[in-house]
Image (cartoon, rainbow, N blue to C red; front, side, top):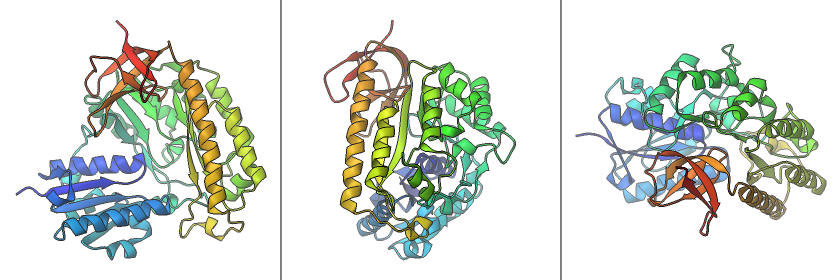
Length: 416
């Protein structure tokens, strides 16, 4: 009888990619991926260590699955497995704790046919495919537990990435390049992210490529040209982690490679190249030592730059990181209030940008949701309603954006 595996993912797109690789391996090994732990022989939890809440959620979900199915055999992989193996191993039904994403070890832990881990990934379960181009990070941000869990930067060979992307392009209209620190892609193999993206665009036709998170100051001339040159091939969107608009806080964070002004200059230079460009960022509030003046500097920088969306997080102390030893702890209430202020600014800027796109054209990929609803995702990362008849999930179309009532406020109308 085929082994039945429940697969649950926490955290970033790099983790999501690893889970897709596990799912492909399960299928290749004669197993079946099921939707609930109640129906499974084995549960695989791909864990995240970026915040304490992420680890708490993992523990809660493992315990819940064990209560529903006491006979379940549980495997925990990923970053939290690397950071807290003893604590995770003590959870009910946990049989294996495997740091990272060692497919051969996971294959063995699940009980699949030996060699299944070598099967190529030709399709993924999501509408948009993920392509992990590298793993690890050579920087040492004082708040980050991911570097401790993932290790140093390791780039995948260009040839294997082009081969995998070509296979994924047969089933997906968009491929998202992801990793832990993709801006450093190629530093260890004599290449660069720009060179890789240029190779993918040249060798894998028709599909739209999108970058996940890239540091603003790591966007070189070649990458800037690709991001703003052809929106049909490379999505005109950048998610550039900011974290703080205060140089003093950036130094305490260990983010030594840019200042608030060099970040702003890089962003303004890039965005000025294109009339349509989406811009996102991560911001942490309440980092140890953050004063009212530091927060005001972040607010001023966010107001200055043309952000179309922000991910704002109150600081979460991670065991083993050097930020734990910093003084100047900020009260949770203050951190949350600062986050709320920045989110309100981001919402206003996003609404302004969306209003400015009314009447414009967009390259739209139809995405699906668990509830069966379908939306469109534009190249500049706007989620939009779709006019009737709604195209099938995964379809790609050129559309005009119109103002529309409803939860998204924009509708994509296909051009004849």
